[in-house]
Image (cartoon, rainbow over all chains, first blue to last red; front, side):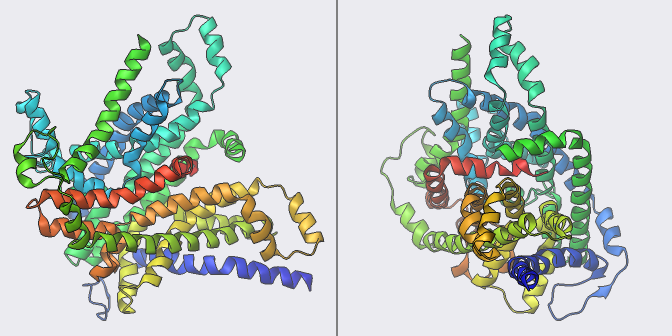
Length: 300
Length: 272
């Protein structure tokens, strides 16, 4: 009887979440994959028509699809080239014994908590031909460098990647600082006694001991880059001419702008498969030290 | 010397991160003539607070902020309650399927929610359920759930089981044990997950775009987008005022719960 009671309790605790999650998350994911083999025009009572692999063919024939993959690559590159070094330096600042580090921490972190839409729109205006960025360039005598930052197809995606870095440096600073503070002080002290300078300490102690944190950073950089949506949707809408499209905006535009729901679903399926494969591969690559990481999480 | 260098770097970085916001704030108090023709460093000639009135009334930003809270607070609570119950089963109940269940919820961490846009809008459209607060709240709650399950389960594993045993001896049932004993102990993880999902829902863009057409139900993102869409650059002052207004609540929440927010927003870091 006691056992039956336990099963009853399990059902009460588990089923609400399990059922809602299955209906609102897993079922739609399966539907995305299933419907990617069908055509649908977006009218709710019009049935789907089977279309075989045509949606995939159409997706692969669209040059913007490859552009969107290249752009995800640029977001990943931006994470390592821009965000990582800047955020690491910021993390060194806010974990140092410097005066005013509390202020700096807040200042660096604030952009990453602001609503993406608000920040995106703000930058859209600041980057216009007559916006703040160009005016500042004019003022310091660099008029030659002024651009229509979001209007020139060759330039637009780099602009968005840089704005993205502006937004997320602070968040990554926090992630990296948690790795920095876990390095015991006495290692640095011993190094100082041996006459190591600041740069040597960074190179020989900080960076090697931050390996686990860097792995986390790498996983995040890649998985978050596949998910970029708001930044692009708000700042450039994927334009000009698809120059800043990423898979998510491509999916959105195909489906809700051009009523190509089938192609939208094939892009969605591509995203699901890519995300699962990447997660499995990343887990495999970072697994040898999994045990020590788990211990660390438990302590936290 | 090294210290000076670090200070200079920090100050430059602080300017780069804060100046665009400060510039937007001053612009929100100017009119177009001032923004376009005066020096970028000039202060507003008159502080035109009426720009804020325009944003609040015409763009209905006040309503949008309220809406964002209407989605975010119940959505977060729903997410946390469901996640607590699931985490309790995963860590405290001797089910043989538990590892499978855990992985089943972990799938939600891997799949980007954007890939679910089309089927969800199709089902909701077919059921004529666009523009429904309860539905949006449930959807938001479920989308935030996988990460909350992950964070809270990880934390609950570390809570000693000796407490459970004595509670069971005293005749305490599982449901009561969860909410009276375990949940309060798991508060650090719960608040981290809560902050994270609150910000996610408050700032949401895509689901409001797809599932809401009634202007009175717009959240901040939608209200701001449509306000700017109508205004364009014709009146930059009120546009910047709208941007400032939607930013303000998040800054207030951040300054109130600084440590928690910092921890929460970097909690994605423990994702494996």
